[in-house]
Image (cartoon, rainbow, N blue to C red; front, side):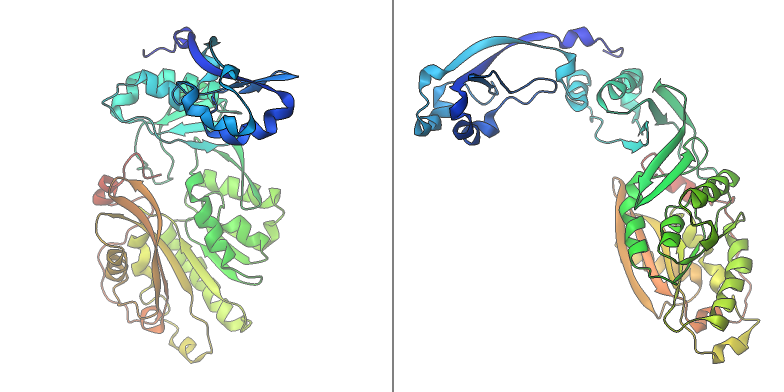
Amino acid sequence: MTVLDRSVFQKSIRVPKLKVEAIKLLEVLPIVKEKMLKLGHLKAVSGENVKTVLLNPGIVKSWEDVKGLEQVKITEDSLIFEEIEINYENFKYDEIFRAVFPEDQENLTSFSRIGHIVHVNLKEHLLPFRRLIGEVFLDKVPGCRTVVNKIHTIESKFRNFEMELLAGRERYQVEVKENGCIFELDFNRVYWNPRLASEHERIVKSLTSGHHFCDVFAGVGPFSIPAAKKECRVLANDLNPDSINWLKHNAKRNKVEDSIEICNKDGREFILSDLKTHLVEFWHHRDPKKSLTIVMNLPALAIEFLDVFSGLLSDQPELQAMDRSLPLVHVYTFLKGGAPEDARTSAESHLGHKITDFQGVSFVRNVAPNKNMFRVTFRLTDDILFARKAPKRPAVTDDQAPQQKLLCTSQDDE
């Protein structure tokens, strides 16, 4: 079946029913709770003076399977077997998929929810079923009005991807809530990943009021907006003009527009100009209790930008005499196989320096078989920031993703 036929799920099944007086129900339920029939849109317990409790026919075959009821004076004649009618409404989406997809092929195991949109990354063997999948999600996921499938990896410089509409309305403007903030965005034009909510929260929790926060690849603001709500001073940047428009909108929506300075630049240009200026001003005017954090969340490419920090302040050596706090960097990357320590090695390679103030490598999430996302955390020490400039390989920019990095992405990456 590649076209959804809801009628094929209509059938009669023979189920065990337990008839008990209403006054005995509270004694009976703890004994049979794990053996009750659990189907959507079907009450397992019904009736008034005499209650009918539906039991799972796969578990309860005879009285012997519920013989424990005798301890509350329920006898064998209380158990009967009768036919009941069930239909499409009684099945969950995963049960429908298991019934329809070939048994020897991998099932559809996960999806993302972004407002009213359900987003799937379908493997090739499931593509013939894509319209059916869309209809089932529309039926079974409360509030779902649009179902889309990503049909290419995220290779554009703006981190959006081509998608196809599987079912529902072609409406991609959504509102989502995360970490106490409201975000509006056009899912067809900007990047949003609900699976990163915990990571966003983890970083924001580490910030305190007065903290300075620089977001190199800010998107629509999942780091920057909650940071601003914590009364941090935020400098946010993104190359995608659509992301910038939504970032500005979300800043106003969450009433933090006065706490965020927003830039629309290539990440490398942003670091060399705006972030550099902000860092110098921060050092000149800083409160000893305040600190500065830099986040670089573009895992397929961000680590390629680290070389820009080498010698960033080589033209201002007098700053070394100041009493300063060193910036903390969180840079995200993908690792295909290998150990977490390889993320540090890669960071040092692109930075061009050994990391002497290393804070750790943290697992963020699994994105595909044998492929994980990690966060490398370290401080920018003077030997990095004030290093003498030396000839480097050609600079990587937001819109120049290396071919090897594109090959490293997969449909599960984002």
